[in-house]
Each structure stands twice: as structure tokens, then as C-alpha cells.
Length: 133
Image 1 (cartoon, rainbow, N blue to C red):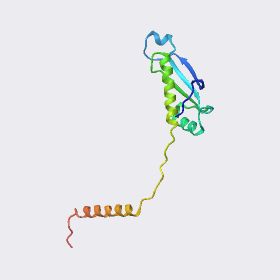
Image 2: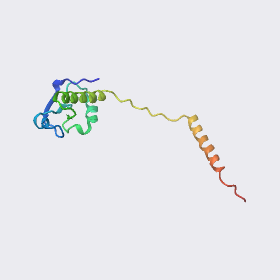
Image 3: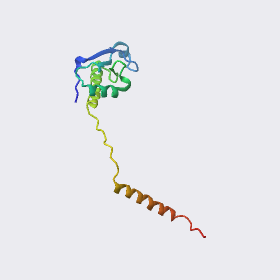
Image 4: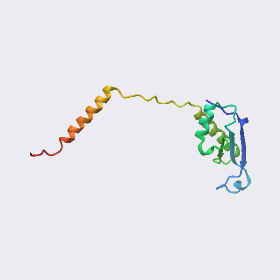
């Protein structure tokens, strides 16, 4: 599992919108976390590639990941939330995907499939009215 040190993260604080009374107009509680994944020494090349791909629209063209946290009313909790979300994304990216090895069906399985089809066909043809010749 990949752990990203806080020294590689950059934080920007700003005032959040929405409800909250006077507190919203006075205190910068929202947090924007910026992480330069492209130039990070703590990531391997494979993890870096998967992390940027997993980030999707949160990743910039320059390989930076932006996470905005506005869920809580305090700056500390939003900062911790942003860090937690980045770490979860990095943990998911550090898991190497298991690739399925394609196999061919065996001769016996092909035979069973064809027998099943012909059995079903005979059942359905038996439902029709008998023809008088």
C-alpha cells in the first residue's frame, strides 16, 4: 500500500459557500489539496499511472490531483478529510489489477452446449400443432 507523505501535498484554504450563517462569511474552512502525482518520488511508475487514471476529472493535464473538501465546518476536519481521500485513492491505485487469462472452451463443453440447444429445439417443436399431410 502506498502512503503519500504530507510534505508532498500543498493546501489552499478558502471560504465555503452554502448555509452556515456568519461563520461562512468569516472563516476559510474549505480546503483544496494539490498533489503533484507526475513528479512524486514516493510513487512507482505503475502506481502513478493508475492513480492519475483513477483520479479522472480531479487530475489536471500537468499530472496534479486536486481534491476539494467542504464537508465539515472546521478547517482541520476538512484538511484531514482531503488527506484521507487522497490516501484512499493511492491505496486503490497501489493494488495491481488481476488480468483474466482467456481460455478456450473444451470439446466436451461445446458438445454439452450443442446437445442442450437441440434438446430445447425439440421441446419447442413439440409444442406446435401436428400438420396433416
